[in-house]
Image 1: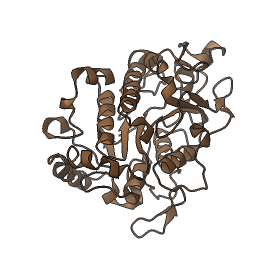
Image 2: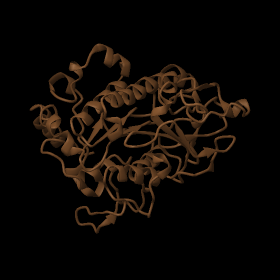
Image 3: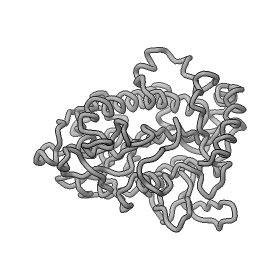
Length: 385
């Protein structure tokens, strides 16, 4: 993202947020903003969660496959998840687990982000837009209400050399995501200002960047913003993330137990519960996805490496029936066993619930029109059975 764009974006933020537009006009116009479909919160789990250590446990497999964590029961009979998510276990009736998601992008972080957020592989030098930016270009909204807010900032360097799929691409800068300033809490009013939230509420989400931005995402949806992206981390280097190669500058299994698991457990559970209690979960999708899964077999360093062939994704809200599992992986969690799910099907589901046809054409500056998804991809109908 260019310096000129960031400068222009900062001016737009001051104009929008300094007037309290999200607090005033947003609350008055939220029904209008959501009138043509569901809202969506996309949680990007930067680093790529291990399916075998989170939501697709393999307790009967050998130790080098099953990993160090044990499965625990949830409030839905027959569904078990990792012990690192005790609060999620109490709310499994609110979300669905897709255990057979797979793709064929190269096993690099940026390639995975791009595919999971645009529905396409990066080819030919053409940068396609993030799903939230497509929504920005297609859906009407009240003046002063951004269509797509990205928190806290775009994904940074994760070792790749292709776009990460979080820009408007060829749609142009007018459809770039709205990115709040880093010091937003110090001068801002409205949905991004958490000072009106109780200390207990902020604590429930977790006193960390991800937790507090999940709370902001809830407030933005309440204020009429149709699409919010929350990046859990900014990079995978020298930071505790899902990227558990087991050696520096990456993370280890201990990171899942001590930091990443509890961080996600608190924020995700609180977000779903708050949306449900406020009557917003039925009209707000919450998608939690990484860029790929991780190798079924533990590597010599005691971690797991990149693995696009199988991963788990969480989908909730917007009419999605919780308490179910879609698809399954094989005994090692290496590849789908039944009902394989592609990133395109996930995006087609999101588009449909937001009132956008996957067949609709989008056109950027000096470009011919193209479909929002490259193929005739169907939504995941089982989610709504």
